[in-house]
Length: 153
Image (tube, rainbow, N blue to C red; front, side):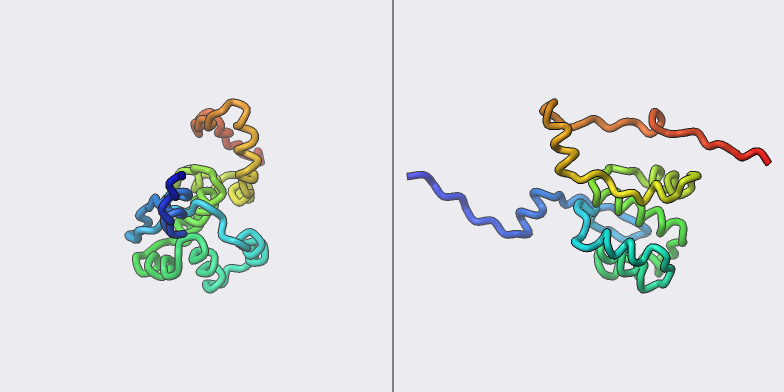
């Protein structure tokens, strides 16, 4: 007779499977998003033209938990800082290990919409790396960065 495994709670499974890494942002410790919240992409599209504080709070809350935005505002987070954190969080949730500097660079590049393009589906990425049997190595930002061009005018 085989021994039956001990039961595991959902929270234990979630921590084990999806990680429990945290990051301190503007004096607040938050869990690094490891998955895109259900319905987030659709809601992001609906709110893409909105600058209403409650809409921004909804998106931030979905990624970093309720109250994170309020604490950041109390600690003096700026608008560009907030957009950088949101871009970084969306990338992390999509499986892209973007740095804060890379998120900021994407926001301030000539093509800011590029930062908000969702990463390829996680299953598709895994399938493409399955042939090698291993995880793909991170490419340095220096080797993938494009140079900024200035218009002549």
